[in-house]
Length: 372
Image (tube, rainbow, N blue to C red; front, side, top):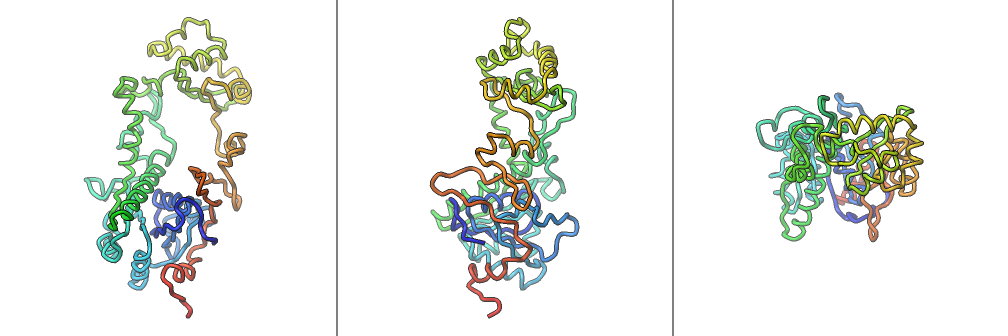
């Protein structure tokens, strides 16, 4: 693999193989140019499907296979920890300590090390050691509550508000701690919990709640109950979205739908009118196909977009021009984000074969020629 480029070029990260948000964090760091070495299992986890080349979250990393029950391999991981800026892991609380790779040991070997820990519930608290997954964390954090309509079970996009959010907060925490370590010479532990990040992301909504725009009852607020902030089924069974929040956009939407002179839609923010208005909107949108609505509304100021599956999204002209998606090795994936004018990242590297980079890692990180 060629030398990395991007704003994080030169940053060394050791990732202990795990599932979900920790690998996502490693992928994001690698996307932005960090040299991420994945301490992978020698054998695939028998309880988890081995995705092989389709493991997008491992793209751009280098892989070294280790047995963390082997004293020799634990010693090797500690040597690698001495040479890196950050270590990230996604084990349950206490597991790394039992392996002899806990933060106290690693920081004693490398005082500048940032030790990033990714869990669902956090390193402490009554639920810290309890098994759970993305949906459970989002449910307890409060973030799932508004994801749905009144009288219907809440439904959130899988992984986005939980696992992916956790990975983002781990990334932010690691980078912030690296900045601190470079200024002070002292590393630290980053405790990134999915439930914490999910709750923190609620602050945008909680701001609206403080202003009275968001009520506790699901389906009764401007973002989840109004007719002008919703998705609708079209004549072909596909869906579109509108979110004409500002009055000027709302008036334009009414005009496009032929409802501008209808007094039933005159008071945009009157909650009492929303159920009937939403029913009327549904009738109107059901009269045309999604493509017909796109031809009429896309590119206008009504705040509109079609609801697309990932394959269709990748082919949309806007996404194509910006190069949002690509399909290396036939696997659809989103390209790195965000973008940088002065230190652009290269295209993501491939998903490494398990243990394929052992010789490179030993030579470049430890100065060891294994076969010498």
